[in-house]
Structures are given as structure tokens and as C-alpha cells.
Image 1 (cartoon, rainbow, N blue to C red):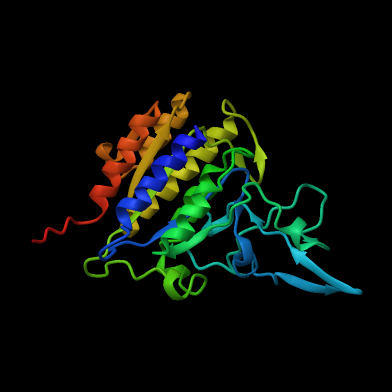
Image 2: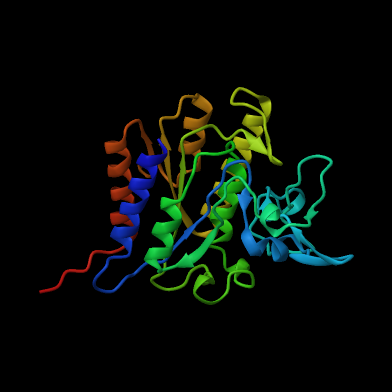
Length: 271
């Protein structure tokens, strides 16, 4: 499954960011499994320093984050000390570690990528994806929103800064891809048939609905989904039924991403 998803995503990048001619798109990536790997953004989104002095050396903040709780759990509210994104530490273990390598050891290993037209960075990140962990779908959905939200422009600056909602000739599009049921929260996997999986899936749909209200167009792609809950989540998250794709093989997955790509940017004809 992973190889097919990578191939489809790589082709998606090729269509939206061509090797020749002007590109009309930027793409961000929000890989997720057990957690989301925020990389060096972990400090600013959690309201904590990425490193701190400890005795003879430094300690490093874990880069793995989970979904927000409280009033901002289903919003794109600006993060930080007032609305922190929680750093994930296994129960009973510290948030800060003496080794940066250990702090960066997340599932997934790949960090988020803010909006960019850097094709080589996008493709190298996609090509390095690995199958690991479980499916923190609500967290992944939330990060898809954060990467597009102008409220996060203080976090993602420069090329990666999302522009304002309603900007003329600008479309904000989220593409959600999963091959499994959303079954993980707080870094804990509860299983596909659990009541928690229903709660996590409902949270993802609520985030999708809030995204759509804000002006983001949501496409969903479910690949080989084997539970009714997962299929319904993809259907409910999409902006409309024609933006929800349920596919079971690599060819259909490729066609879905190609369709989404061609519907995401206008065609420019020249002679």
C-alpha cells in the first residue's frame, strides 16, 4: 500500500509543480502515524523551548506532538502557551531528553513540511515515508488545516506562510489520504473497533467541517479501507461526494490523485 501511495503522491507533485513553466501551486505535507512529527516547530506550537540547560549540558524537547484538547481542539487557533499542541511523551517518561536524536525519534520519522514549491524537497520527503506506528487521524487532519491557516503564519513564515482566507484567485485545498481507520489519540492506539476510534473519527470530521466553513476545499482518498467507520469518515470529511475517493488498487489511487491535481489548478492554454 505504501509504495502505491507514494507513487500517486509523487505524480501529484509533478502535475502541480511542473519541471518547466510557471508553477501555480505550493504544497505542504503533514505525515502522521502514532503522532505528528513537528520537528523544530515543536517548541513554538507547544509553548516550550526546544532545548534547555540541564546541569553540564542541554536537554531537548521531544518533537512528537498529538492533538490539542480543550477549546481549540477543533479550531485553527494560533498555537503556543495559550493553546498548546501537546508534546507526546510515553506515560511516565520525561518531555525533555538528553539526546537530540532521541527527541527526534518519532513515529513518523518524517517531519511536517510547510507550504513550498520546492519540488525536490517534497518528493524526497514523500519517497522517505515508512510504514510505522498507527493512525492518529484527528491529529493528521488538524495539521493539514494548520499548514493552510493564516492564523499559523507566525509559525510558518517566509515561503511557508499561509495567505489570508478569501485572497483573490487563491484556493486552499486539503487532500486527506489514509489506508486505515482513525484509531489513535494521545499517542495511544485503541484499535479499529473501539469506541475511541469512533470518537477520534468524529473529531476528524468536526475538524473537516470547520476547515470547510473557513473556506478550505477538502478532498479525501481512502485506500483499501476495510471498516465502515473509515469509509464514512472519508465521505463525511470531503467537501462533496465527488471529492471523496474510495479506491482499492494502485491504478485507481493514481487516477484519483491525478483527478484531484487537475481540478486543483486552472489549465493554461498557449500557442
